[in-house]
Length: 454
Ligand SMILES: NC(=O)c1ccc[n+]([C@@H]2O[C@H](COP(=O)([O-])OP(=O)(O)OC[C@H]3O[C@@H](n4cnc5c(N)ncnc54)[C@H](O)[C@@H]3O)[C@@H](O)[C@H]2O)c1
Image 1 (cartoon, rainbow, N blue to C red):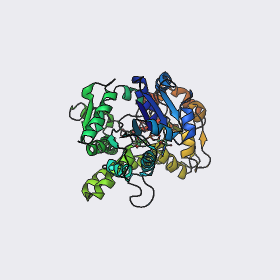
Image 2 (cartoon, helix red, strand yellow):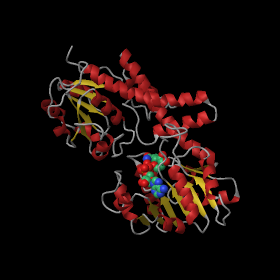
Image 3 (cartoon, rainbow, N blue to C red):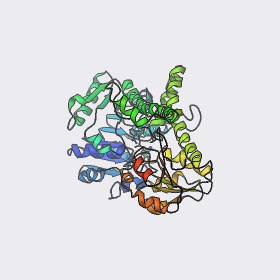
Image 4 (spheres, helix red, strand yellow):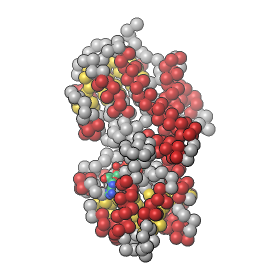
């Protein structure tokens, strides 16, 4: 069997590497228009950072896992084609700022149709609006031809930073297919592939539309939890409650559960915001104004939380940060990835820069992406070493939960910084009492400040 995957990004690369590892008898070819990415997948410097991924790729590379720019050949030879291209938010025309931009997906569908001479199963791996499969089927079957394309929806639930573990041992795999004989046959074939390493009861099936909507809903619910606890963090700061204590207290209720209840500077990543906006747009399209407004608020609270963090820095530093050196510890949207798409650090840095702060950006994996994201800002310094970055700094703003930041020598940092030395812990991961005792002014999210000043 030959599998082709169009799109060698954060999803296409890892998911296909896992299928190739688990199914040595299946040839998996990942293709992309981005030549640099395709080349990088075949080196020791993969185009994305993901713990454990290099080993998984190298196990199958050249055996049954291939990366190529010859898209037509891979499509032609494939029995199953996963489409894992990007589906960003539309920036123009109808639905701009909310709807999904499906141009990359449609280009793929047209290419598949043009090149194919045998029946194929097309698997939606990208996150797509409900009923995209229907539109794609129309494109694929737009003229009379003998080739049959069966479209399945198989959204990806991996989380960056833990992609390998998530792919190896997922909570569930979801496959949506049509209730027709050819739909059922295609569904069964894909189930057989996943069943090689995933228990059968974790492979869920549904109709195509439920599968498409489940992915958007999963991301909306996850993001909603972050915004919910962040909204409470603002109230904690106003009232003297401690958000960590509140999270713990509510998280022990088994109906609520303890995960995703950590107050912070907010969620980031390429998916949450884009997928919620997409959900909002879908609701509006179907005339569900109140539902659209409900979900829109999840995004608004996220942006409010980031701006609130910036305002807190300014207020704490005597209402001016002009000419003050602020070190950003962590630019990636979360730990264990170099991905900075929609990272809260982007907005916070822009807001601090607008107040004329001197920014130094530090991150173990995301410096290159940060440079791109902040290319329009002048005089920003990038320094991977936190100690170099903190020399003569007035403040540290910790924005990514890299575990290495817990092990920093805060005594040393305190000594090399200007006084009063401020720490703003945007992820609530540091030992606040300990660093306060070293002399720092300590601010976190949803907790009282620890200050020596009054
Ligand atoms: N990143 C995640 O954690 C994650 C998780 C679950 C689902 N998703 C979804 O998966 C999809 C892909 O996300 P990603 O993060 O991998 O995106 P990405 O931008 O990292 O990768 C997409 C790749 O597709 C390629 N591409 C675009 N058009 C192409 C074409 N016509 N032919 C060949 N290649 C083409 C791009 O060059 C790019 O390398 C999105 O819909 C996203 O919402 C992402």
